[in-house]
Image 1 (tube, rainbow, N blue to C red):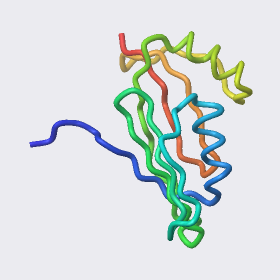
Image 2: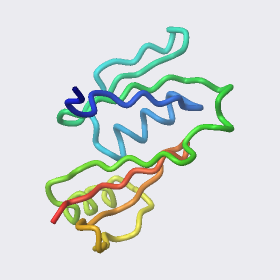
Image 3: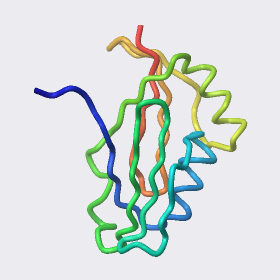
Length: 119
């Protein structure tokens, strides 16, 4: 029986650039970085969400397409303000007919995140 999303495992082009985005822009906590592993990896966390980043250059052409992540936030307007303060290039929150107010942001590898406050 499915209990929920436990982990996102993302292949990235540059571990350093991706960690800078997830930590510096999104505000996630870095749990560990192992640049000497094969492949180089980093583990990050935000609340119950865990993300593992693995540097895999050979999968660059197929990555990020058709995948969208919806991440719940307590106040999307407040989170938007935090992202702007951290230097994110992002449009203001919008309301959609499907029941949420959200902002959209892409990471350095074009993975698309929707940060949403559900109504």
